[in-house]
Structure formats: structure tokens, C-alpha cells
Amino acid sequence: LSSSPQPYQTTGCACLHPVSALLGIPLDQVNFLACQLFALAAAFWFRLYLSPRRTNPAIRHAVATLLGVAFVVFCFGWYSVHIFILVFSSYLIMIQATTNLHRYSMIMAMGYLTICQASRAIIFSYGILSTDFSGPLMIITQKITTLGFQVHDGKEYGRRASEGQLHLFTKLPSLIEYLSYQLSFLTILVGPCSNYKDYMEFIEGHHVRRRLAQANCKKSVEDNGLEPSPKRAVVHKLFVSIVCLVLFLTLTKTFPIAYNTDVHFVSEAPFLYRLIYAFFSVQAARPKFYFAWTFADAINNAAGYGFSGFDENGKASWDLISNLNILGIETATSFKTFIDNWNIQTGVWLKCVCYDRAPCYRTALTFILSALWHGVYPGYYFTFITGIPITMAARIVRRNFRPYFVSSPVLKFGYDVTTWAATQLSITYTVMPFLVLAVEPTVRFYRSMYFHIHVISIAIVITAAAVGRAKPRPRQEHHSNNNVKAK
Image (cartoon, rainbow, N blue to C red):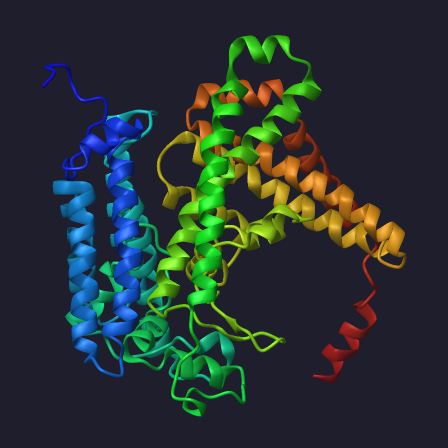
């Protein structure tokens, strides 16, 4: 054996190091892929041989938990201790707190996550991070806070019949139920976060029946004694995952993100060329996320989790916990549409714990929480703070100009093409700091772009505010005086 240091190191299991050296892929990524492939096989076995019809829910909980624990130990080694500390500490808070459970859960989960991310950033600086245990911590933070808020709401408001209150409950989970929800092998590495009640119904075997009842669907599981098969959905998502993986491995070498901040490129290339290159380099970075989230979705579906009902053609839909809509992302004609189709379950979480509850400045606070959840790198904050005026400007433009273009198919087509291009370029501009992470390359990139999206979006917001103040308000003084006299 060579005495030189290994090219790729990890605190996780090193048994796959020969594969890492052969493929030239970091060992932590090889471990991750191995666990996801094993999880896919285990998911089929979980659905077929540990189905709710033949297995006690406690056994399903235990198996899901033990496999999840094995995955994090295999991938992260002793770093997995951080995951277990967060999970058990939050459970202690849940069973001890009589009031303000949601606040204590949020402070504990977000605080510990931030401490871990800060220490990780200091240790590994801005490189490709090995032993990146923050991914599971981020997903677990979502689950802890979602559960805390839903238990709080259940105690505070009781049972409600509206759609928005379907996930409220008052009964605290047992330890095995809680551990299964947090550490399940189906979601431990990539997620997505799902509602505790949905997960429990999946484990107990009521998942499909409840979705059919929600949709008032006439089809019934009892019609033929069989649940809808996820095979078609799993095969489709695996095919998409493979295509995305191939695209990522090829396109990222052709359009490296780092070239956007190269000093020579920034100083010599024309503005239009730099803008076009930025667009294609960000497009080339997306398939990595498409692969990870689509493959994770396929794993959940293979276990029988994710059924959302039947579509208008009578085909089973398996997108209940899907994390993205690739077609919706690539054809988005507004900033909001893009966000709604990207990292969907995180958007649901942000809406649940922040946007719907903030007394003011909901958009700004939601973007800031999202930045804090992602980590402590400056690039995250550049991205999400930049997104605030862009989102506000996009709303203003859509509200004031779209009505003039919807009456004619030709005008609407032109409007859609224009807004698609504007949206995609705005996304490129906004997410570049998220990919380069550090302050210096971020500022260099924005300078090369002349801060044009910042200037345009802020100008739109200021102009709209000025016009709104200049408009005369309806005269209501006379009616108010009459009302006062009547009282």
C-alpha cells in the first residue's frame, strides 16, 4: 500500500474505498450511493414482506429505524452522534414541555443545526465537503419542528374539518414511533420531510384508504383486495434519475460553475456571453438535485409510501411527498412558480412554521429562515436576501401587466415566453451565490453582472410603492362620521 494519503477520506465506513479509487469519486459519495441503492432494494422488501396486512406496525417501525441508523453510521461514522443527540434531545423536550412546545422545538432544532453547520464550515472551509452529516440534520430539523407545531396546534385549536387542519393531533408519539419517523431509512439521507400523520398511516396501512377518502374516489382497495402498485411510478422515476445523473456528470465538466467567477473570464468576456454562460452553467448544476430528489422519491414509492390518489385518467398518482416537478421548474414563467416546484416539501415546511405564522414581513422572514436552515455560508444569505426584492417585483409586474396579455392567444404566448426568459435569468442570477458559497466570488460575479437584477427589482418595488402612495384614497370621512354619530 502507498504511504501517501488517500485521495478521498470520510469518517464513515471505508470498505468501499477500492470502488472510490477505481471510479475517481469521493468515498463519502460512494457510500451515499451504496446506501440509496440498498434502500431501494429494502423498500421493495419492506412493502412486499413487511406489509401492514401481515406485519405488526411496531415491527415496521423497528425495521425502518434500525435500517436508518445503520445508514447514517455507515455514511458518517462517529459524526452520526450529532444526529442522535438532536433526535433524543428534541423528544425529551416534546414529552416534558406543557406549553410552547413549538417554540422550544424550533429553538432546539435550529440552534443545534446551526452550531453543527458553523463548526463544519470552519473545519472544511469552502471545499467539497466530506462527511456532510448536515443533510440528515436538515431533514430531521424539518421533521422535529413540523411535529412540534402540529402537536401545539392540535392542543391549541383541537380538531378541525378544514383541509389545512388535517394534520393536527394531540396525542404524543411513543418513542418507537418518534424514532421511526425521524430515522426511517426511506428518508434519513435525502428526505423528503413528510407529515407525521401521513407517515404513521403509511406504517399502519391506512395511507391509501385515507387518500381515496379525501379525494371522494369511488375506487376502493377492497374492490380487488390489492393496493395500487407503485411499479410504474418507480420505474419512471428511476429512469429520470439515471438520465439526470448522466447529464450532471457530463454537463458539469462542460460548464463548471467556478468559471463564472474566473478573473480572466470576468474581465475579458462580453457581458452577453457571461450572462449566457451563467445560464447554462446553472442549468448544468440542476440535474444533481433532480437525481437525488427523484431517486429518494422512488425509494419511498417502492415501499408503498407517497400515494396521492387517482388522476383524471384513472391512473394512480405517487407524488404525495415528491420534492420537485422538473417540468414545472423548466417551464416556470414566474419566480413564485419556480419556487413552488423546487424543493417542494421544504416550501411546505417553511409555509407551516414561518410564512403562515409571521405577523409581518412574511416573505422576508421566510427567506431568512430558509437561508439559516441551509447553513452559515455567506452565499446562502446572498441568494435568499436577493430573492426578497425579486419576489416582490415579480408579484407587482404580474399583477399589473399580465391582465393586458391574457385576452389574445398570441399576446399571451409572447408574454409567457418573455416571462419564462426573465424568470430563468433571474433564477440564474439569484442562485449563483448558493453555488459558489464565498463572499469574494459572489461579489465578483454580481459586479460582472452590474447588479442589474438587484437594480431592476428594487426600482420596481420603490416605483410601485411611490405610485401607491400617490394615488388618491377613496373619500370615506363622511361615512365614518355618520357611523360615529350612529354609535
